[in-house]
Image (cartoon, rainbow, N blue to C red):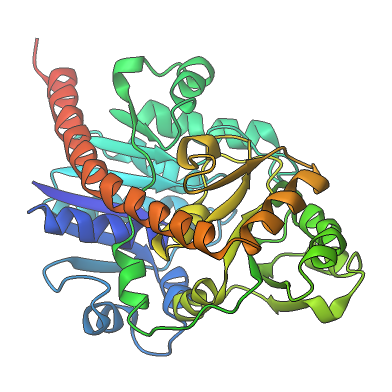
Amino acid sequence: MHIGLVTRSQTDYALDLANGLEAGGKDVTVYLDYAQAQEEIGNSEQPIEFFYKSGLLPTTCRVRLLHPPRMRDLRSFAFIKKLARTMYEDGVDVIHVLLNPGEIWFAMLTLFLKELPVVTTIIVPVANVGERLPTPVVWGVNKIAACGSDIAIVNGENQVEVVNRIYGIPYERISYIPLSLYGRTLKWRKKAIPEEPGTILFFGRAHPQKGLEYLIKAQPLITQKVPYARFLISAHGADLQRYRRMIVDPSKFEIIEGVVPAKVMADLFQRSSLVALPYISASTSGVLVTAYSFAKPVVASRVGCLTDYVEDGISGFLVNPADVENLAEAIVHLLMNDNLRHQMGSNAEKWMMKMEASSIDQTIGTYERAIANHSKTIAPN
């Protein structure tokens, strides 16, 4: 089976999946946005050469780098048509699209591949709180992909009912596969970085959905009981300046602004004692599974599908969203109990190791179902 993985913005997800599929004996061609690939490696070298040289991808995996126009550029139509032709010429057996909100042309790609089985992972089935994209846009893009796909993958158990109800996808065309791949992370862990005691990491977009303001508000409560606690914030987005102004004691914070390459990301996770996800809305979280990949426990809100991933008291703590005291209490408890924190981190990594093999098997099974479904739809009467 020859699988074509295509994404505009989920480079890390695609790299992990490609590694797992190649290890499972499948042929893989990865179609990646050039700018996003460069952002991932943070390197002036050519991404393809770097992927192979660093071991981020096996040399048997083919990579095609894409240069798509801006989403609002009508030249994207010609770009997508050309990409579809390229996929046919590459001889892939099934296409897997990793779709983020608003990526309308990559959703449209599914409609240009009528002769190929198509699987789409709908990363965000429902618009998150504070999403800048209007809800109808998120819905419309996902609906296009739903219409063009033989099977839709979701990464949260409760999302199965959601995509069935909202997008009208029959249950037999929905596959729930937890986000649990971490082969790429292991490559970046080659360099051992010691943990810095009391370091709480927030990583990702500075966006209302992510709840960074609640972590900032929790700082006085946390440092009152754990004076050596430090807050490591690696974030990007226009809202970051607003959050900076909320900080009461800047001496407790280290802020890294902007999108960081994977090498820097690895250093930050290894430096941390725990990872905070004080979200008020979520679908799934790549940050959460990355924390697990680095054997770090999490303190996460009970929102979206995070409860699928966090075993409360086992791999981390679940707290009420927007509850500053609850958030602070959980973080303090972990910082003051080294043995518990390290055991939770070990539990988290074991969960990832257990789930990864299952995830690849489920994904391959989904491709096989998509091929069978597609054969039925194009079979002559």
